[in-house]
Length: 151
Image (tube, rainbow, N blue to C red; front, side, top):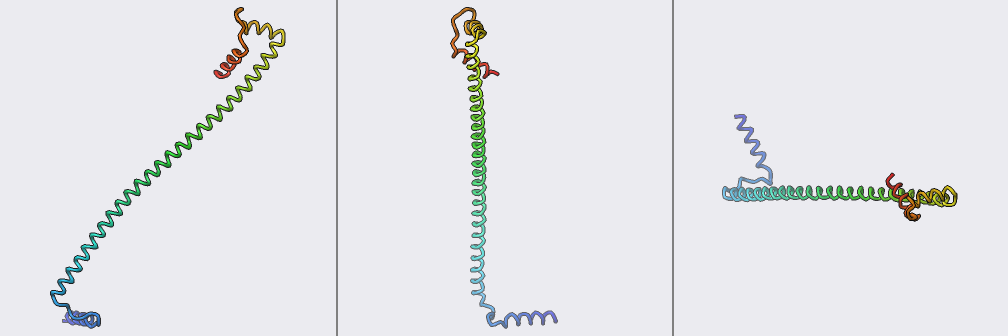
């Protein structure tokens, strides 16, 4: 009995609010319930569509990020390759400059040898091998260049 009285008090408390009136007629209640059901179904479909869109956008984002990472990697490879080529060209330039100075020194030595009697004997042995025709100074330079390049 006490429980029943408590429930009656609670019902009276709820129904005494000015905005809560008596229970609606059954036909209206069914219409309201159907309307609420349609709204809930509509909202659930919208939530499902939004989740699908989110998943689709996440997939697109993953693809774009992957492509960007690949582009950054390709760019870094190109930068590294360019820096290596520049370094190789610089080293080759230094080597050529070294070769030029070596050839210049060798040309000076050949000039000095030619001006001395030892040089004339050397020239006759080196520049006229086996009594053959004279070897040009250009040929000597090329042979010296080849020796330096191979060393």
